[in-house]
Image 1 (tube, helix red, strand yellow):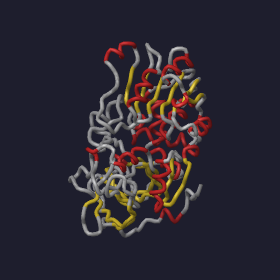
Image 2 (cartoon, rainbow, N blue to C red):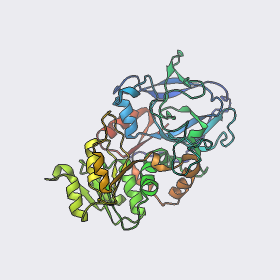
Image 3 (cartoon, rainbow, N blue to C red):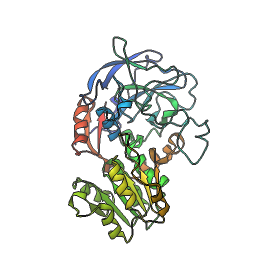
Length: 394
């Protein structure tokens, strides 16, 4: 695995005379579904009111980027587009009215924003925001309905998940930018933009896993393994990992998975096997695969009377949930989780500090590092199931 020092000074140089001006920089542009991303020069406008322009230092790829790149959901197909939502960087400039962020501060972009003022943000029971919540259909800025990206001949390039981090510079609403400590290792902090926060938060915040409880995780990508890390830290007595790639168990053991099941090796549904292993089912199951058949198995693997299934996988097809309503009368429950139920701007800084103290081992999730110019290779690593997180340095 390649490396880049987290404090390399050359990465921290930001042109001092570009405030209020258009910046020309490199970006990886998706021009059509499944076609290789094109590294090209794009124009990035200055931030408008309550917006921030960032210099991206590190970014990585998750399955949400992969799904969008493939165009799996036709309603979300917008091209050309700059994908990417897991990153870290430095504020280059801020727009009018931004009071909580300053030029030069170290930050994490978040796809699920927090304005702090709406009825949603003021309620403890949700981490959604009325205006800046995750929205895969949104492809322009809210201020004026226009993009801040364009080709060199002036044609718009669309935004993605409030972030668009596959670019050396990007513009976000200030509600989608989280300030972290200046001494925080930006390379590792990249993982908090999505995968690790989503998985650990699902175990801590959504399910509230207790010591001694039993857990099953369906899909052992970065999010699934982050769930395992969160469950381990909460003292779960049994953490069952389910995946059709048996190689995932090697990494899973290091993070805390106690048992591994490959559905291809079983002569019965995996849910029945889990019921046998646990004397009636697990207390919590987590679906991280984005597959409705897997979701049903996850649901049936929980204990009737109190079992909870947390849905984390991205489901691209328009099919409905695979349950009969009466099945819920057996006491099993199901709930979705966005960004691990963390409120980004108010709660993520504390989580970042916990990670810096070593509470969560972020190093286990970074399996590859590549220069930004090799982003298509990074996508292929994820397609082939060889990487958890491939970190790209810009």
